[in-house]
Length: 258
Image (tube, rainbow, N blue to C red; front, side, top):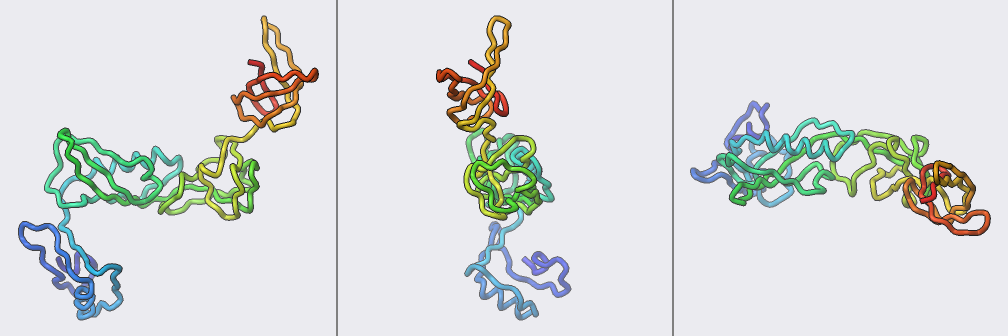
């Protein structure tokens, strides 16, 4: 292992360590490595751990795994621009089996880093680390948004951010579905699915139009909504005579008798 493996543009190449034959990794003390670097004039390096582990690069072809990761992220994000994907086995591998399946955990797309497992037909597993360098479209609150407020481009702003780590899946397109805030949302907060819900198109105590179809006839009457409702919700309403009926919400202040 030479310094040029770490800094390819260096003009002062030198040996860092040697990986012994029939071994694929070599661990050295961080303080020893820093002393060696300082000796050659590289004093700006620091270490976050007591040891540095050098691993021999595996020759396996990871292109299928990279494609799996790429499709996985594109499936989970409506608006993502992937710049690069790096995949490396967690241990040294000479080759991969002829047939295998690739598995990724359900919520790994929330982070730029994850682990892929490769499962053989004999149920043997190999694990790979991956890193995705990508930009993702998100929405941020322009100001404080109160609970039950409809989300629009007036109170939200669309931005592109580097994919790092999200607590939950970010909202990516507030135009495709009418959404409202599920809770109080602070200013300049990234909106995620846990913060929003489908907009109520009928509000409690409002007067709505109810359509009733029977024998080819259509009758429309007004009724008071006794509940909030989204499209296709079944809610209770009260007609002018005081009778409580169940109706299906069909649109803004509109419903049908079931």
